Image (cartoon, rainbow, N blue to C red):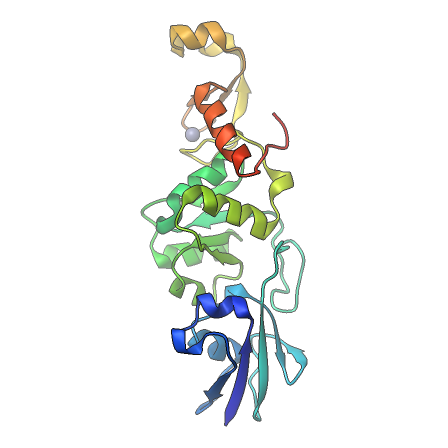
Length: 249
Ligand SMILES: [Zn+2]
């Protein structure tokens, strides 16, 4: 039985060279779901925003019983992970990420922007999938294969190699600009920072910091102290060059 697959042009990123830019004739030798067919071509289900079989909207579990045309649409930005859709009927209740080891720098930069990102160089693929499922987190990775796992519902296969460009990619793809608050989380622990009275920590500060800075934040977990020093200014400038700004200062 033949299925004609019409992938969105943006899926060329995932397709073999000889499959790019054209309809694909898919021979169905056994019972296969829409998810199986799409992923066998190299497109992870997490990148798919809509599927139609013979013009009718279907979900990933649909099994074609007759020959026909399968249209595969990409997720359109901004991807609203907080709203239910046909392919993802259970939305997330807040935006949280888990970063794979191949995008750890991206994970840390997103924490700097105030996002909740679980990231560790020790996570295995199994752990990433488990964390995504158990903690309702969006997976960020450059590993296409990882995203074919059923446990992973929300994700982005990061395209760029460069960490700052990756941040822009995530901010634009998930429409996060209005949620950004620079310097509100600990980059070591991913915990929300809390204001701390200078008098309570003054004995821990270097003389210069003691003299020039008045507002301090502390991580409730590792007790690290943060203030808006030169590192903060440099980071803010780098982000503003990319068009990324904090919701509040
Ligand atoms: Zn910390």
